[in-house]
Structure formats: structure tokens, C-alpha cells
Length: 405
Image 1 (tube, rainbow, N blue to C red):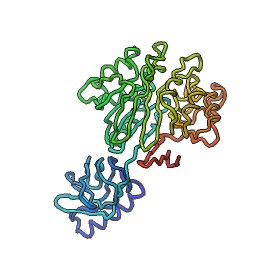
Image 2: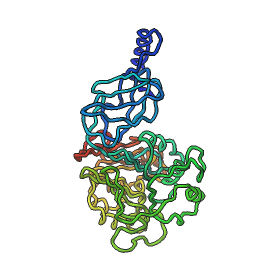
Image 3: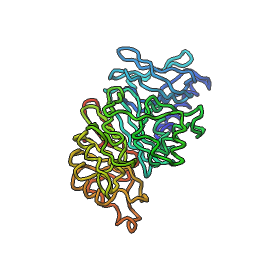
Image 4: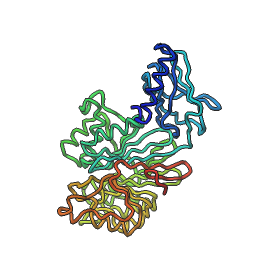
């Protein structure tokens, strides 16, 4: 889609081109490249006129780098910068039907970066990690209604290479199942997506719901990784620090078949920074098993914490927050959700611990009578943000929605 700010200019240029060429195509022209600054492996759009469906695109600097063209129309080329592209400033070149168009210094490729998008899936969790080489890992997929949000996010990064399901609660599983079932929505059919890596936090036999039956019917079959297994996303590492209640200290700390306490716990590392994502791990609240203590021993301090279990009273113990010492905490919870997340005591613990809090939704706003009052967010919190984008540069610079940490 052409950005609104460019549309008028495109129309003017198209009229001028038609006038100059007498209404006959006179070769391609590049008007703009968006975004103008990218990391290797990231997608770009080239806007212009006179492109053919078979047009090719490249970058020219000290050498020539062929872009991976995904689609082309007469006015737009969607392409991807190769993961091996060196940092630098490049001319953008489009070749269409034997003619060339060049936009001088049209694109700057920066050193590698890792982007983590905490998707706005409503009441649930869905996280998309994109490494420096463009490989992507989707962790959970939110509830059933989140399929469109998840699919759009995956499409924007060029597809999903790997998936991880922390546990089989519907608000993590349903959207993922819908995505992997493909466009026809039927699990086990030819258009099912089958990513290269398919991790799950516990034996899916623990779940007996109709949704889990559909999940087990997918062509993408999931397996439990071992603690210590790691996925390399072109220099960004996603390490398994816990699964099925096992955090590498010998045996499980989970005491029953509760899926939350057996959630997959992952640590994303890049540029000397760390981000913890732990599904719905429990921390001893409301009589739950404290598996967060074992997770904290396995993890140590991190830069960013995706808050366990949306801020449920079962999670985010004082000891866990003190051990991880995050500078920023991301909450994935729906506005006026039916579970009153994040729970008042958890919000108070966050206020005491002092990290900057970001939330996809606004917590409890209009339904305070049901939930012991509206959510009293810590001072400085950014709430109702929608999808939250965290970017880690190769040199360790970290931003969340453009704010440095």
C-alpha cells in the first residue's frame, strides 16, 4: 500500500511521465524507497512507475547486491535485503523490460539488529522475533481472534521460519493454530505451514480440549526441546532455559500437570542484551507452585522481561523481579479483560521494583468494580500502546517504541 503522504506526489509524477512519454511507457522510474534505513534481512518497498511484473532490483555500492523481489506491480516492488548485505549507503536500481531506473543513495543498510514485536493480540500472548539475517521466530499466537494480527505481522517480515508454543492455553495457542492451518483453515491440509523449528513447552497430551485436538492435527508437529538448546537467528540466540518444569538443575520443579508451570521459558540474546519470555510461569501466588524461583536461578538479570501470565496474581513474585532486575517490563493483556490482569499486587510489585512498564492494552479501565479498582499503573508507564516494538542494535543499543534504554 502506498503511504498517504506519498500518494499525491506519485499521482503528480505519473501525470508528468504520461505527458512526457505521450501516454506510452518510457521506462521505469523510482520515486522512493521505504524505509530508507534497514538492517540486513529486512523487507523494503520500492515505489515508482513503469515497473513490470518481472522487474528485478539491486543495490549498488562498492559492488552489486541483488535484492530478493517478493512481488512487483507497475508502481510497487516488495523486496528483501539479503542477510549478508554489508552496512553502507547504496544506490537502488530497478531493471524492468531491459531499462534501468536508479535512485542515488536511496537506501542505507545499517549493522545487524534484532527486532522483537510484542503483538497486540488482546488478552493473550504473541511475540515475533526477527534476527539480523531476517529469520523469524513466532512465540505463541494469541487467541483465535488474533489470527489476522499475527498473520499481518508474519507477512510483514516475509514469513515465519520457526515457532515456539510456551504452553497450550487457548490465549497462546488458538491464533498460532489458525496461522499454521493456512488460508483454508483446515488443519492437516496441503496449505498448512510447517516452520523449520517447532518447539513446545510440555507434552501436548496434557491438553484435551477441541482446540488441542485441532492443534495435534496440523502437519506441523511440535517437540519438546532440551534445556540449553538454542536457535541461531543470524547472530541472535534464543535459548531454552526451562521447559516442562525443568530448568537444568536436575529434575522438574513442577509438582503436577498444570500447563502454566510447565511453560517454555526462553532467553533472547543479542548485542550483549537479554530478553526473557516465559509464557504463564507461576511464582507461588494463590497457592501455585513457585517455578519462577528456578527460572530466576537459570536466567539471572535481564534487560527486558515480558511479564509472566499477563500479570496474574499467580506470577511475578518479589524474588523473581528482584533476581531479573529488568530495566523494562512488557505486559501483554487486553483492556478490561475478563481476568482483571494485571492484578493489583503485581502492579504494586512492579512499582516497587522500578522498571519502566509498557502494556499492549490499558488493563482495567471501565470495569473497576469487578476488579478491585482500575489498574493503577506505576508512574511513567506506557499503556494501551498496541503492538510494542523492541529493537536491539548490534552494538547493544536498545529501544522500545523508539525510547532508548
